[in-house]
Figure (tube, rainbow, N blue to C red):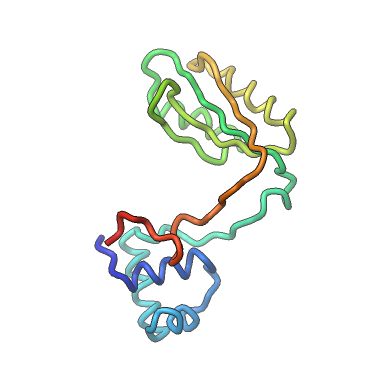
Length: 157
């Protein structure tokens, strides 16, 4: 789907505040509320907008520690096999395959360092995991949403 400037501005407004009304977004981007609604409906139907969610401060839920864990897997472990296995661990908030020596990178949120250790032990017990390498986050320097009007992708025309 081709996104024009108004579509990107509407998406940026929703990323900043998904509870904004169509009228509020319309004032911001220069459209009527009904025109914003039509565009949002079209963006949802096309799959550009996949849903609406609340951003919650992890510490408010007791998840005060986070870590990144590199997984080194045996043989030709498929990305889907890794995905199925790590999905069983609610502390894994994101996972991706990566370039370099490791096969995958996991982002873990936990209550404390001991909890992170327990999660890593459970993941390391998966039959395809050869070893792990972890890094504990000391402080988060940037935690921006994917797209805002101030932080637009350089790849978007």
